[in-house]
Image (tube, rainbow, N blue to C red; front, side, top):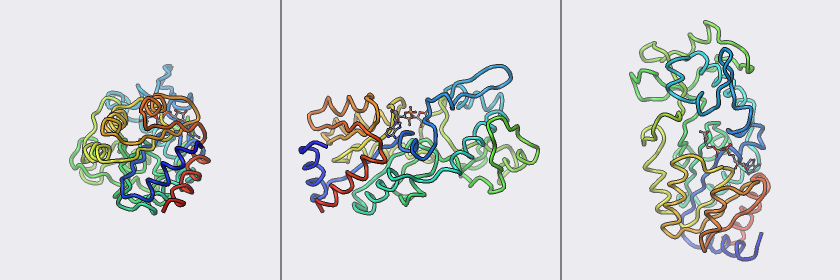
Length: 275
Ligand code: APR
């Protein structure tokens, strides 16, 4: 890590500025959860292979609700078996260090940040949480925890009538849907903390982006807004990516190439030295 970045992190810790962390699938890769754009995301319905961008849509849910649920229950099983890694724990430590100076915006639906110790109040799950479902007909807006009895599925396990019984809205008894944002849906505040995320971006003095390819809308707005307001930006990724380039194109930005599970604990140590 270069000397200028070390000094920047220590000086930030000493001051009273705000920190916003934005994470993507890369932070959970070291927990064994495949990143979203890898081949594991693909799914077969009948004889056709679908990409996540086709599978994770309301359009597909309306046509093939059981196939979409089957895909989500498979992914739910992967998330249930995973545990937070040192990267998640480092971000939980950042919240412990900076308290109300800290906000976390995550695109991940795996719930691992909360399991690592970040608080639900300061964690904006902008693409939802796979451990929750809500009424497909929106009889109520409230998300419900997925019943514990919902079984873990392997990729090719079909749904049983019992699974379908469990995947009903507790309010009206109609079909439930996963509590996630689909590609053909729009962000909102009630479910996905859209405005709160933009506010955090506007107010932040330091933005750390971690393990994301920068392919979705709100994260792009967060980065643009933070940079427009003059925030310092640090991007952490194993590969060069659009957010790394955005950071480097700003006079106050840094790109740290490496695994989040290694780089983030080092950053926490530097923040601690500055406190
Ligand atoms: N440490 C840091 N970065 C990593 C690591 C790691 N150990 N492993 C992978 N990465 C990086 C990859 O280089 C890539 O840039 O994580 C990024 C993962 O990119 P995507 O799979 O595109 O995931 P993400 O950016 O979170 O996708 C955003 O798109 O499909 C939707 O809703 C889905 O939330 C998801 C969103």
